[in-house]
Amino acid sequence: MAVNIRPATPADKTQWLPLWQGYQTFYKVDLSAVTDATWARFHDAAEPMRCAVAEQLDGPQAGRLVGFVHMVFHRSCWLQNPSCYLQDLFAAPDVRGQGVGRALIEHVYAQAALAGSARVWWLTHESNAQAMLLYDRIAEKSGFVQYRKAIG
Image (cartoon, rainbow, N blue to C red; front, side, top):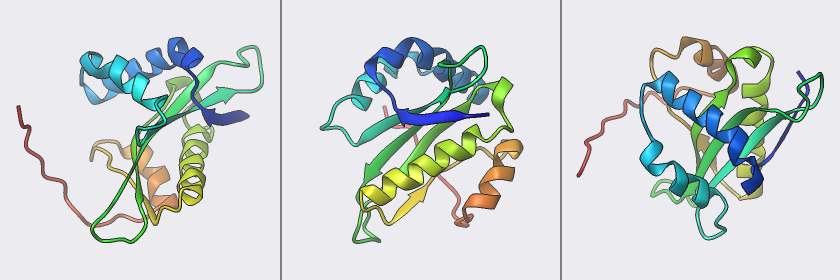
């Protein structure tokens, strides 16, 4: 599938939102309380968060958004240069296995390099076996296990 990976624009919200809702359904979460704030942060130059979208280039649905990636740039106590956290990645179910996810990740790699980042990193759920087939080919497992505690 031919796609154009580009920064999201405010006009993309109506097509991004169903993808974002699909992402939440996949992970069995409801992030509706923070959705508007998240979208606004992507378009605020003072925020370290960015969103890129995959736009279908060919066929009768040319122009349709078929995926997104969210990234957060941050400092690290372990590195001189900043890191890039690939927080969310989603491809529409009907385009999975056609290179959309890989193209979105490659876009993150390129953006991280432009920003002088030392590393790109992300998490996935242990049950996300299909995505891990791709991740195992294009990145290394760190060996770390995530722990967390909700505060408030």
